[in-house]
Amino acid sequence: MKILLVGNGSYLNRGCEAIARGTLRILQGVFPDSWVENHIFVREMDKSLAILAARADQAADIRQKILPSARPLARFSLSWLLYQLGRRLGPHDLGYLGCRRFENLFRSTITSADMALQLGGDTYTLDYGFPLKHAVLDRALRSKGIPVALWGGSVGPFGPGSRTEKWMGTHLQKYVDLILVRETASLDYLRGIGLGSKTFLMGDPGFVLDPIVPPPDLLKGIPIEGAIGLNLSPLLHRFHASGNDMPRWVNDAGALIRRLQESFNRPLLLIPHVTQIGNDDYEFMQEAVRRAGLDPGVVPALPPSLTAAEIKWIIARLDLLIAARTHATIAGFSSHIPTISIAYSVKALGINQQVFGHHKFVIPARKLSPDHLVEISRTTLGQSEDIRGELSQTVPRIKALAFEGGAILKEYLAQKALN
Image 1: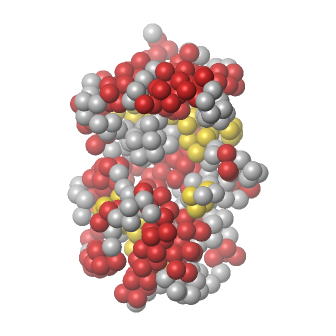
Image 2 (image 1 turned 135 degrees about the vertical axis):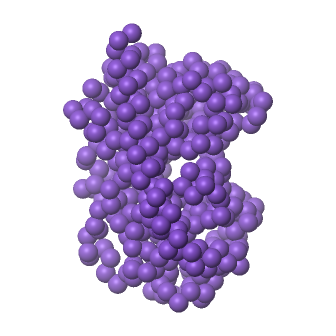
Image 3 (image 1 turned 90 degrees about the vertical axis):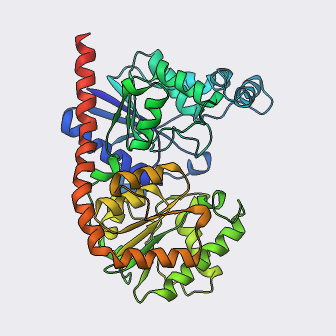
């Protein structure tokens, strides 16, 4: 059994790492002798890094292959013009033509496989723009006779009744064989646009990531037990009230850190979860600490060389986690830690709905302020025992749903073999 994982990013994004490692664990349970290759997108600015993981010894368990660059040819070339026209038509099949070089290069790297899983968590949303390059992967795989499944992510919404929604609906109907979503908001949406027959619910693969004890030398002098963990992302400048103004968001983040540090009689620990060049939580939060006039020794940060599994081990020892990165929050939920989500898209609402049945512990990014954050943090800490008890009831069901995704995939391939 050969399975391709496609469309995910490198382990410099610990969310991508959590998805890949959780997926591998699920696949090993249903296809123990499977051959798994992980074809990842890597940004041009990150390609200079020899090992696209936190540490060199952490990248060998899954065969990694870097996908070709999805950028069209030179500016104002025919491919570039087709791509731009396809985008502006909102979207249009001309977008495929603009990515023909990428499609052909990818197609030339694959021979055959029993299944391809589109990973990435939120790539089939509009959070990071229109997912054309992922759509091109679907088309290339199907042209090679390889069935495609969207795996354990969120899908949509693409704008009710819009051209984008119509185009995506047509694409998913034509080029994707199976859709496994991680929360009911996506499930309901896909059913509503006529894709219910191929759509099923599973748990996010990050829920079944096993924690690993970090090397002790990486944690010297860092308080963990009983701390409040904080993850802030530079990405939030697009969604915060700072209005897409990065310098202002850095200052605002510093004010958030200072207020938390002054308001609670317990350690505050900064938790980077993405360390890509230009999208680095560690550098961003360190600069925010400096802007707030705080001593970095008073508000320490986890070293950026920790893996997703090691960060999860640390998160499991906190009293409270506040996080913007989705898979940092999933590490908190799955470790039964009271967790506040800083949300910039519907996926946080969907996952909190799945975990808690409500959105009480979600702060929309545009409403994030020091007063609001301290208030909800106090409330969450005050309900800590109840929250842990609730998570101990719901999380095992979500983990079982994650493994159910493997069972659905196995049944699909068995039925396909009979037809």
